[in-house]
Figure 1 (cartoon, rainbow, N blue to C red):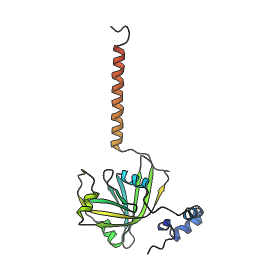
Figure 2: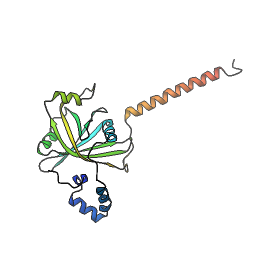
Figure 3: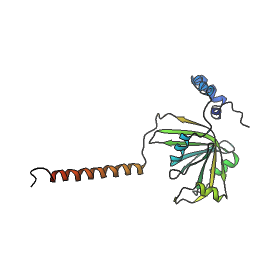
Length: 208
């Protein structure tokens, strides 16, 4: 049974709070707690952010507490918000080490870290995760359309709490496809302007 008084207690353990007190930040976080703490439900703006991502980091730990982080990626929409507390995605076939799956069988506590370099925004999501095998209907629902990866199973993540970080120290980067599209649009506009300049020159008074 979850005995946390506040949603943020999933991260702010008594030891963390003691350190916050010693280092002077406890009062500000206590005020956040008194206002209800972090949110647990997936709000529409968070859902839109999640489903726009092409990359996510999934953290788990084994029964001994050894942490492990695995990157997952796919086209925008590969992360799907199924309801206000559940995120799902197809688990594509990879190197077949199955560390994440083994960890989740022993310890279902998990963490999602999403970062959008273009927007310089990061979201931290605490919760519990489970692997779903042999459910072709669920896997098909989670599989991105026309994506060539082979789905092996599905992962369902139940959200306990989430928090957004400030953009400090996040370098701004852009997706190669977005840069290519912007450059192509620039070149199209330049070509159009060059054609217009040539037309105006040809129609100028006194042009032989």
